[in-house]
Image (cartoon, rainbow, N blue to C red; front, side):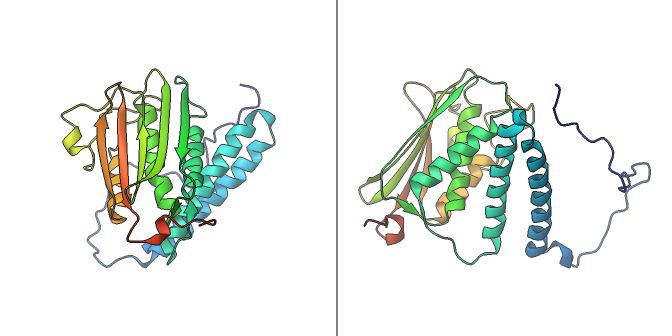
Length: 254
């Protein structure tokens, strides 16, 4: 394709890894100070910077504007996640905005895919505010990605959030193939997946996405359930208590 970016095959000044010598196994048990969290975040930020430069170069070609914007949005989210790892607190965010951001990132991940059309809808009750917005984006992105992969012929993913009897109820429903009944009891355990390969990338799945969802939700004193819809597809329902922490329902107009 004319104008497409070329993949580099050599790195000037960088020595290729040598594989003909047997590996030497280290017995050192003292933690490496270069692998502390702050140092890892620093190194990741260097990676993000390189990606931003590459995205900016792509943006100079009109046919790559969409891809460039998607890369920049993903880098921004990565920077927010790494920043959150070393920050003491997190700002509040409107749940509607969190949902909107998650859907945008899910769409970005499909930008260069060749799969069928997938549509997203959202219905969020006004005034719902969440702490740790980045964590809830992770929850939603994992659920949305899971939903997309479950719909080999396309369909619609629906997100809804509302107050129900003193709790916030957040649901993500799809029109896919559903969850095998034998997997439902263990679907949130690590490395459990109903997929053997990513249908768009052909990669083996880690089976960690739903486990991450469960971990974040339960850390916030919430609950998450998975079920198959009678009309077809799967539905994930998250319930979060509101009575114990006013931050969950505080809004600018309240």
